[in-house]
Image (cartoon, rainbow, N blue to C red):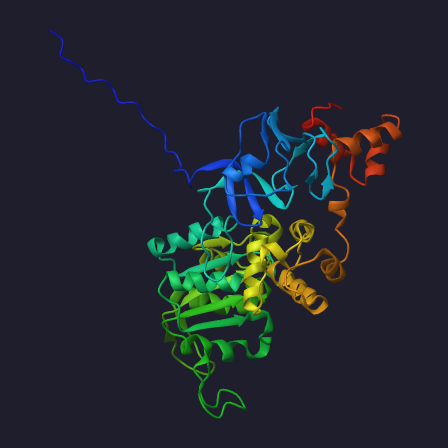
Length: 426
């Protein structure tokens, strides 16, 4: 009699765990942060639908906006609302079907919504990350910060454009790893090449003509804490080699000394440059990059988290000692802020709000003062495409797509993509 042969278990290939739920959503950027799961295709959004979700607005019509999916693209159409529907600063003609890209800004009455094809995590707004406010747009920062105590990296690399708040994230990383103090912030681009070693690593008495006494240097003076190296991508190659010794051996050699000094510091570096590209070009040491990037955190640009903008503006106003109540803010002014590219990010927004306060001494935010400070709407807002504008341009161009694109001030490719998403064909 044959022996029973146990069945073979099915092999399961390794899979990456989900980093929180992702779903398409409408995120309210103004008058207060909240988010809703995208309604079913064919749904009509109006005053009652919004009120049920906590957004009461008498300027929104009972039947205001229809949402549907076609070929994977999300499309919206105004269904004859009294005050109109605006997409990226352009008003839709009644029943004008317009496709939405990720990040598109919708204005209904005094409400601004941002469409997100994939909203990560819960619909509820998130608390600040360190000193940065971001109810929805900083989740890609919060997640790696939360994982730092488990991984315990010796070094952290923070990447992002100028003005996004990299030092605040660095301080949050230091706090997460129990190294909040002492904290030394050093802009390496601002340290003169000839004194870099003595300032960073210290020197002994008599090491050079002005060295009448020994100095510990920034690193040793902050032993047990955190060394934040800003603009690390600006560091010369020969100085990169000297910094590598600190990262590899946790020791520094003071200028003129014979023996190294051991230190216990967390090194957090920040850059607005593409270090991987610099490594490929030979402009940044590969071994130094590998050491710095034990943990990496990318801080998004402000234009990539426009749903956070009103919350950020309120926090900046609070720090300036003034209030920014939603009822005193013109929705057109806030829409203008959401659609600005903000090349200087939060730093630029702070400067713009300060300029507005100098022009307009009344509380709140009004479009006239904002346009005095920022200028008129950016070009990409002026050329926002709608079905009505596209059809008018095509008719005027006799159906020639290239000529129509020139009339609209966009590329031929952008116009073709719009028509495809809108179901107009080529």
